[in-house]
Image 1 (tube, rainbow, N blue to C red):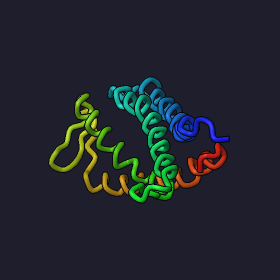
Image 2 (cartoon, rainbow, N blue to C red):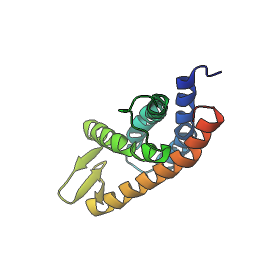
Image 3 (tube, rainbow, N blue to C red):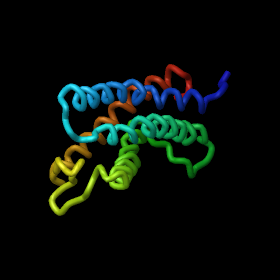
Image 4 (spheres, rainbow, N blue to C red):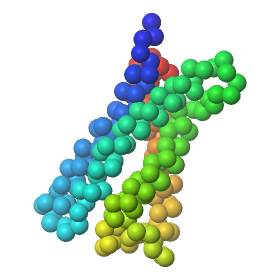
Length: 154
């Protein structure tokens, strides 16, 4: 019996960010209130708390759809790890665009400037992005893939 596979795919997709984002929120609150950092970091957490779990769930539904249409030759059949590693290619531009629109991020000549206080050189952004790709690959391959198997959609 294969009832509601897209709902199960969505729930398996939102599992990881739903667990991790409250930890980031707690860290942001500690930095802002306890350590009294004078930057409005709550603006930086709004986008991830609202959008990231939704996109993870939709991304996993897209993976399920690509594997459910095995009879169509045009459907891509990426392994779940590679499919998940492609998600930062969607999230990073969306997050950067939202941060620029909110005035949280400005792109300078030598790097990105966060909250008009912290400049991150572009040479540091590239390895961090590559590390994010590797992290997403591992999380999707082992955690989301496991959840998909447990829920019977893999």
